[in-house]
Length: 460
Image (cartoon, rainbow, N blue to C red; front, side, top):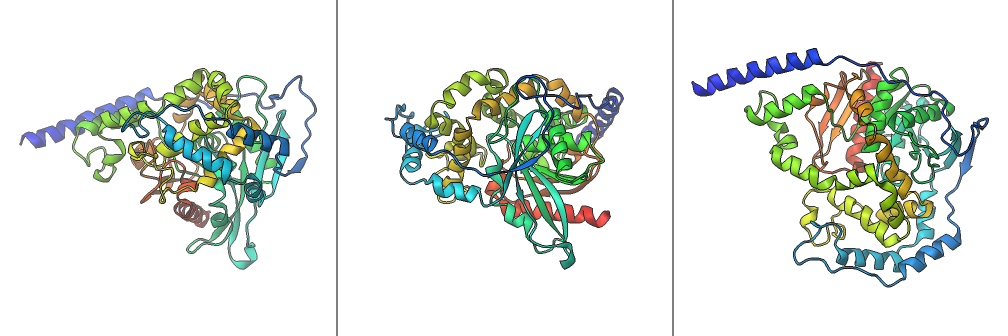
């Protein structure tokens, strides 16, 4: 009898809490931004809208400089006994990777791989924006519809993240009625995209730049996909420009509004099934463990959101330091048990991302000198968190697809995400994978994108 009373009281409390939250939640308007800002150096100039072919060709002097820096004696501190990766990048593992980098990794060959897709640059709002284009391999005459897809990377990734998934998106797949014409831009300040000379280029501004890019390419309507920053930019674009977005697919999403926050607290004290389904318990609980993990894994975020130029100066000077900083994230964010392994999983045969691909990504940061500007993106966005929280409170009516990878740092159940996305077409719990889904599990992510877009196209 006591249990029944407990359940009844719990349901009543939940109902009252949700009604209070709904009354408090007044949907704000989308914040206005300058429609034609100038982010480049100096005064605004007439904009050259030409789309120019671009080839990755790192000067030989830069390649030799990297080799020389890698050849310097390493000044590493021996790791603590049994610490593995719990203190960060193990110096023993770092030494092994640096040895491989300078003796076996071949940039010339890897550069050819990166150039297998055509690259371009175009000037938007004073910045040279880089993108690659992967064309669909069939035409609509063969019964498969070609649809445009804007595929957006995050940090500490780059366009390099997508090389394993692109063939699965541009070619017909079993059970799918679509193939994709894929555009992969580099976020301003990342890779080969020029960084802003002025403060203030954040998520909303990037969303506007990417919309202008797609329109310049002839796409007034298109699909979005992203993880990490790419997921948040996609979220913003779908919210800001619903008439241009056919659908948005995300492999990382967390909605921060009163409804989900109340559900999170109530779900921690009420039995499974009342607020949070049994199958979703592991996504959120135990709360103490989740909060501890988030606190442990977000120290970098606070640093980059406050003093990016300080740490950036060190990383931009040393390829070994840069590799240490980036590789530790690829270790921890692919599997939550990796910090307890001697090599952080990076050198394991079953690590899902080949070492050469990890080094490709690091080399893009190194050769472009973009680590500092990439980290400034945190300062631009977390310095204006009110705009980010505000956007979460604005409903998105664009069809949404959610792929939930179990080793992602933060996942939410469908009924949490529905507070933001009102038309969730697909929500799929994936069997494996973490934060870098396109690199780790390209087959799973590609299949989920195909499933989502096929379902949306059938409704149109």
